[in-house]
Image (cartoon, rainbow, N blue to C red; front, side, top):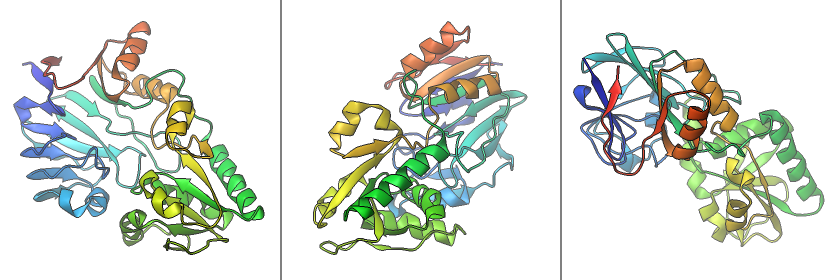
Length: 321
């Protein structure tokens, strides 16, 4: 029996009435992590305990089905298993098994870094393509972290406050954890605080931090803020800014945020890692979502892999066999 994979503001398996990271509220959904572009308030949601804790209150599900990594759950006519994705604390991939027909939905995925990732075999792979163009090639994780630390120390030595611009949820906390080995203390823009508290409540040991106070000078603390927090940053006496993102590889994007410099420390796979994921999963069919979908699908086809992009608000009936 054919099982359809469809796209309409989210990936769906209609025969099982389940959605993966849908952009609008649905009756039954899997939410892979707490970032707002993936987390919506659905009626019933399968997610990890960490994702539930990190999700904004207004986006928490009406009915949460908390699932531990590796624990299969009956859903529809199949089984759902959440597996580590490495993107941030609690981030998951979703493996759906319907009588031996397996689909893996990656959500946002990161192979490098300290968090474990599992890549099971599946006949169908739905893979993110945020950095799905060949020029997105990231340096080694530890070398980028070291470069950030050197830059921060240099800023301090020259009497300036180093300011790291990154996502307030997940990325800010992962940056703190990565830089902890260098003994830095931190000042966090207020939007970073809820997720930071949640990380601690979930058992993560974070370096010393305090809330960033407008007008106060920080000569011994690294400031972390989302790009939207630059209004507060401008009230610092003397500072330097660095964008911390995979988009550091894109000069236009870096200039858009007006940062003094940028470091390509990403919480996603780069292009070659996306190819590694496809090789490891060994699917018969790949569908690309979220990002440079056409580019990644085209590159996969050149490598002899059956691949198509799911795009826009089209609904595509695709064979899931």
